[in-house]
Structures are given as structure tokens and as C-alpha cells.
Length: 230
Image (tube, rainbow, N blue to C red; front, side, top):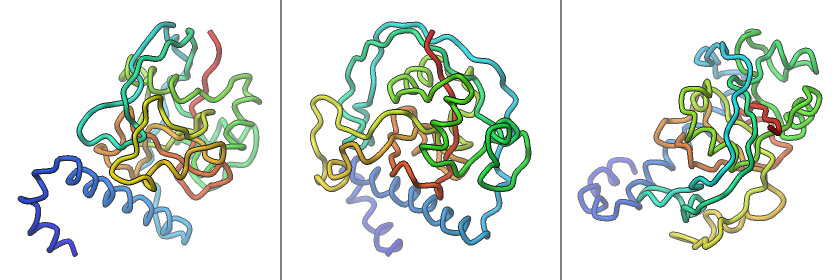
């Protein structure tokens, strides 16, 4: 199948979105297969980085552009639109195994200084509440990632980060290229994760990419970045 697709690339390249969607889907399936290997105990976590950053940073209030109109953006990232947020604070670093262990046993083995992973949404939310903080909303996470850049350590490349937001359509949403890609998942069942894990390809782990899953899921490489009101 790959050979046939490669043969057709010159023709497919006339449709940038189609080429991008095929490439991104293959990369996303690599992560899904790695999750399966991890469940079988056959995927190492040596790629997980050390968490060094401490404290939090203030994100000023005001408008910013949420979403993307880039050619390869999925329909659920579109359309880009202005959102006005009050000021908030967000942690510079991810929650580590050692920090989570003060609240509850981490779901899996790992170094004390690496991000805790394989957390469900209720577990992430409960930890944030115990720490006197909360999970960021999806717009808060994206604004912080776009404005602060390197001030957010491991915004991608470590673990997916749960947000408090449900997965729903942006104003002006249009299903593309087919309704079943995103639209059937909209509603109160799914929660949004942002960032990207140690398996996620940088092409997928862009600031506007919206990952989503059922809140009880733990097989995903999911962790925590806390936020709080300013």
C-alpha cells in the first residue's frame, strides 16, 4: 500500500490537504501502535525527558487567535478565530512522578524527575485540585503555548496534557473532508488533550492540534500541566 501511495504522490501533491492528511494519519497511527506495545510492556520510555522547570508564569489577559487556517490543519482546528481570555497562570513544568507520588501512586514505573504519564482525566483533575490548582482550558493552553514559547518546558515531546475542555466545534466549523472525522466526536463525552507525547511527531504536535479521548482512558501517553487563576 505504501508503494502505491508513493507512486501517486506527484498526483496527490496537487491537493495539499490530502497529502497532509495521509502523512499525518500515518504518524498518528505510529503513536497508536506504540500505545499497544506499551500495554504489552514492550515499549520503553527512555525518550521521556527530565523535568527541570519549576514555578509558574503569568499569561496576560486579552485577545488572541485560537485555531488555524493553515493548509494541513484538520477541520476541528478551523476556523481560526479571536478569543478574549482573562489573565491566568500556568506551570512552566509538567507534573513529575515524584510530585504525583505525594498524591497517589503513579500509574507506571519511571524516574522521579520524568513526567508522570498514563493518567486519566479524573486522575489529572483530582491531582490539580489537590495541589490547589486546576487544569488549563483548551484556549488557555494554546494561548500560553503560542505566546510563551520556550517558557513552557516540554510543551510537546513529553506527554499529552489534559485540559478541562470538552471536544466541540469552533464557531463557523465546517466538516472536511468528511463529517465522521471530527463531528461525530463532538459533545460532552470527550475531553481535549494538547501538546504531544514523546512518540508524537513534531508535524502533528503543533500548537493548534487538538487531541481528544474519553476521560477514563489511560493507555494514552497523558500527563498534567497545572494552571490557576491570576
